[in-house]
Image (cartoon, rainbow, N blue to C red; front, top):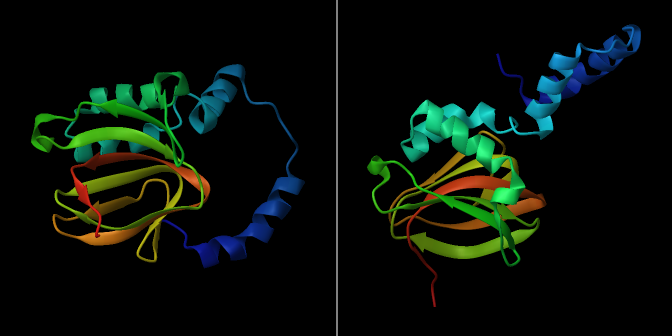
Amino acid sequence: MAMDDDAVDMASPAWALLAQALEPSRPPPRLRKALLDAVGGSARYLPFVAATNRIFDLDAAAARALLMRAADRSQWRVGKPPFLAHMDFAAGPACGTLRAGFVVMEGDTVIPRHRHTDREVTLVLEGAIRSDGRTFRPGEVLEMAVGSEHVFEVEREGAVFAVLRGRLEFPG
């Protein structure tokens, strides 16, 4: 069961007391390595395998390998602000001619109102993005239909996301 933000805020003092009451212990080396890999290493994007599989028409093994590769920033190309880095990849056949890739964007970026001439699907991996007032955090998906319009914003901390997209049109 997921907790909403209010429930998390109410539970925080209880978690702090519990943490103070417990004796610190060192996890076994294999468990420690697995935990550190999961939160900051090569496995940090693996919670998104199912969504990557679905969005990009990849089997689970290909999605897993792709997310492991994405966790290695040496695989990315350096971009120009506000696009700090990107890594393109081939989506499966159901995605047709849409382009697929991972993107790192700097914080406080605003992409002005634009129209999608193809569908676009954005999976947030780190940070947060906003679209017309709605915020999307890691694991959440922003889907834009053909012909839809919106303003795309990146929150202060920046964002990393996977995107399946076609062409965009900017007014004027």
